[in-house]
Length: 276
Image (cartoon, rainbow, N blue to C red; front, side, top):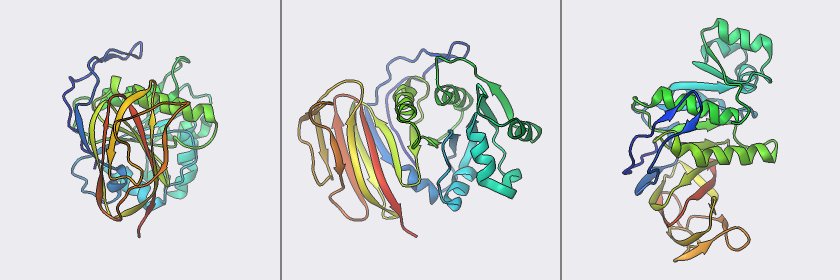
């Protein structure tokens, strides 16, 4: 389970306008465990689960584990069609608490099925925001007074490039909406944001890391130092058009720690293979 320690104030925002009002959104330090560990870890600290409109490629046992750990579940628009088909005859046992979106993609019979089963239907017609951003705003409001370890987002990879970039943009906006860490989880990769400060990313021996990358977000990073990578950075800058760190890999096998010190936001992305 992800653990984040920081010195930020609790964010506030206006649901009616979806305009974030959070201030002072900067991690001072963090200690992170990748969400892959949620497949194994104790259910004592629940997660929030958001499903976006891309094929659900997770092995069923991993999906089941995440679903059982989720105290809050939200499915966006056309993702409801994906969930309906993915679960087949067992769909009655996996009813999301909420469906949100402008509902231009969901099949009428799927929408009616979940409505009849008790899902709250939340129309979010504002076209200035993506279904992910609007769904994250709803989830952030639901969990603001609850203990939630992390927000895991499924269905954020694949498909159109502009959709992928929009998901990354929402990830960068997430700190304005919630103090809970948001992670984009796929069948074989995971992505999350590292804000300005010092970070420790704990890797366990339950999976192997196939590759990893550090990518500057929004502005150049002038000073980055890492440890635990095959190709470490030492007081180096990164920006598009010059240097970014891709196709890297941890310098250790099995369990270990990667540290990252950065003066500006970075995207951490990592490919993994589960060990049975």
